[in-house]
Amino acid sequence: MINLDKTDIKILNALQENSRVTHAELAKQVNLSTTPCYNRVKALEEKGLFKQQVTLLEAEKLGLNVNVFIHVTLEKQVEEALKQFEQAIDDRPEVMECYLMTGEEDYLLRVVVPDIKALERFILQHLSKIPCVSSIRSSFALKQVRYKTALPLPKRGLTLYED
Image 1 (cartoon, rainbow, N blue to C red):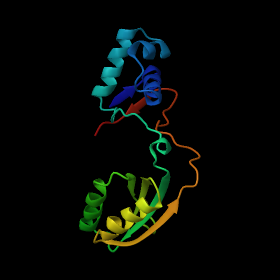
Image 2: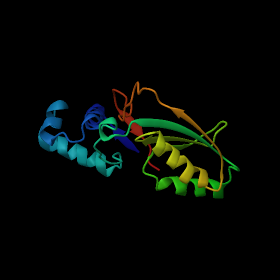
Image 3: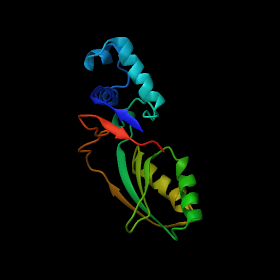
Image 4: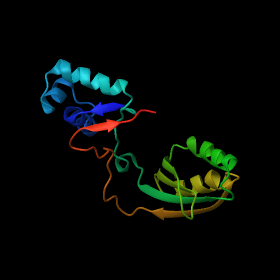
């Protein structure tokens, strides 16, 4: 069991907003001195609460202008087909997210590419060639209204149960 108090939650929220914050700046934000703050961060890390630290880039400034949601249906939703599809998708850098879904489609992908031609190549040369794929349906994002990476944490403490 992992108990997180109000200060731990403040630390986690601050790090979700800016993982590059210095320990001194973080300590000031959460009203601790530097060493106790550092020790808390280390303890949170040791508890396995940090998945990874990344830098989020501006896709459009890098020429990645097309954000597409692709619904994929498999011929059969059996373990071998699921595994085959997931392995085929795992190596594709344009696939930003992939979810196994309930409902009519089996998977939902979020794909980011520079243009329609790149999307066409991805679908024709990669996605449609996965043997277990039955149908592919795409929806283009016209505008990103909201995008966030920070998880919604409670204001007060939290108790987590370890596996």
